Length: 213
Image 1 (cartoon, rainbow, N blue to C red):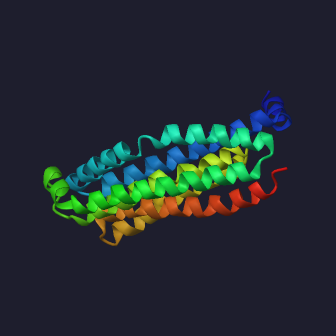
Image 2 (image 1 turned 90 degrees about the horizontal axis):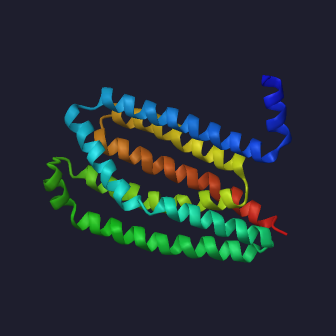
Image 3 (image 1 turned 135 degrees about the vertical axis):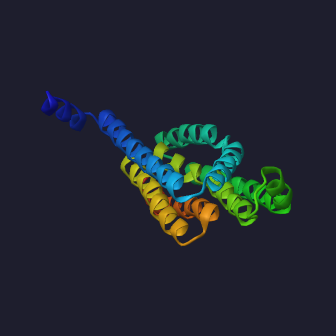
């Protein structure tokens, strides 16, 4: 039975791609669980509460990115089907520049309002607010290369990028929190890991676009 299932997955590309994404998502969820389990143990209850409060703020700012990634994936796949490398490049570059500007504006506003935000949440260490700004910027940018890989059907590369991001986030979080950076270290681990994901995705994306007929 198992042999038959494996044979079916291998023979049909749609099953293979779905399996790759399923495995990548599942492994990523395991690393996310380990991340939070470590934070519960390593941070004080107050620090963990601050971390979750800032995660909620990050989710608020990054909320549109889910719909953005779905929409961009659709258009990248459409242009890929048409064989238009230029259209894919223009879409990704144009959206990246606009999102970068938006992210910088939001980050600037967070920096300006850092003290009032810290006061509202009763956060004593304002550095964690500055760290949150970095996470917001990279969280807005990251869906763009991921949507590109998804739309170009580079599912293995997409899975590797996702797993690399979650694994590096866990490793960096453990190191930074152990070194005494606390909530800021946990947030910075997410920023650095997301940047690593983008750096992995970009050359693969560039190489894939060059092969569009």
